[in-house]
View (tube, helix red, strand yellow):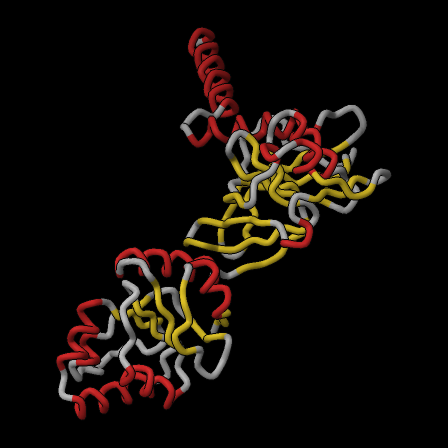
Length: 311
């Protein structure tokens, strides 16, 4: 179960605390929300008590019209079910009977000035991001031609230097050294930099540099979807490297399969240009054109043609 800070919710969604409850953090395990109109009417079967409860104008009007004794019983059952918090929309006045029932169980009540539909949309987006599965990987994330490229490899292989050359060529840095990756959808990963080292890069022999200050705001981006992995490794003369590109490799991160390109590193190779070519080539493949397959098809056609002529 994820723990969400009330302060974070207030800041991200522009909310106000009406009653902070018994804790400054709330336990939420889903980004789904619930509008408790049926519960106020007395129907608690299949009640999703683990969700954030959003009370709009309809629910509040219904509560005001209820018999006080029945209302008190249903609110006690509602708050006593262990709900994480109640969010009031439209900047509506929170009646004393609602606060009184919330205090019995220490349930936070927060309020938004926005319309119900709007606040629900923003809340779901926020919870999707806050509760997303996440992991931190060693590498460099750069935005190359609009594609999120995760550079990986052994320490000292030249990931940061490659990223720096890419930045000089007009591309953008997301994160250097440590990349926080979160799964925001079934097949979508978002990479961000840890707040402490955002926009900073380490270049051996020079030290820490501030990319934003050195190259301008256009050289950095706060987050980016990860589209492919480029793995840098030291050139091994005993290893056979793919020279045609007919085979495809993948790397799995948080259950998402990402295309992977292995680039051997040795003196004289311009890695930044090779990364650009790899990204362009992958974009062509996404659009249905594969140069390796095209060449293979031509060779097979030529071989078949020569075979027929010899017959």
